[in-house]
Image 1 (tube, rainbow, N blue to C red):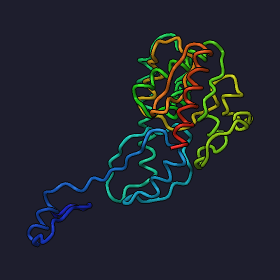
Image 2 (cartoon, one colour; image 1 turned 90 degrees about the vertical axis):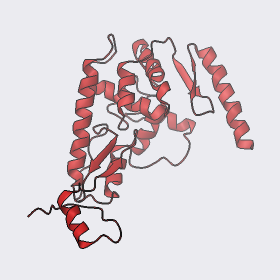
Image 3 (spheres, rainbow, N blue to C red; image 1 turned 180 degrees about the vertical axis):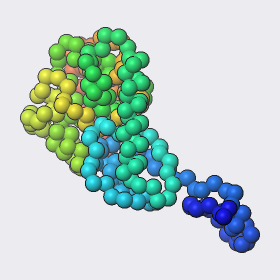
Image 4 (cartoon, one colour; image 1 turned 90 degrees about the horizontal axis):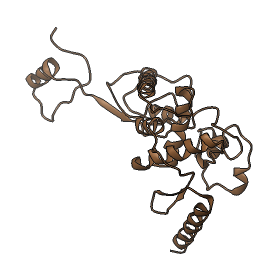
Length: 249
């Protein structure tokens, strides 16, 4: 009656007395799955389907942006649908808490709008120190009525998060009219383009105070920022020289 059910780890050559002791006194094995920031909901579902130790099928892909990326612990036999519910609860609680402590004067009328922009910031950079700055650029654009002109929104409009685009964006892609193409639509897209992490949400709700309106890749994994279009054009030309040099190497 003192033996407990669950998944246990037994060292090699454990005696029967040792087995009984483990089943009576040791903790069950705790498994974990890490959900990276910026995955689409379809990608998160695919990750859970491939995670060993989880059971059950996922009938419906959750809404984009509704799950909080982080490391989740589970026990062998836990249901995939239950883990998805934990992710959704984590996003609801995190977004509500950050929304209550947001900076004043942001151009959002709801937490859902902040979530949309956070998903764009998440896809624009993997550098934590850049997120508040990129959020500041987008917020400046929203305040001035400028289009966001974010490449990841173009990609999402073409794939809806179901698969990778598999190639670089072309100029004609930027002209494609989809609800998510922020080169064509004048404001935020109708929904998130990924599942942003806590840092991206915080960056959008506490953006860096800046006058910058533009940024472009710098070839080193980050971005170069500019406040004027003339300065931005020079940065773009520099990026093109870097890219051309790399292609020749």
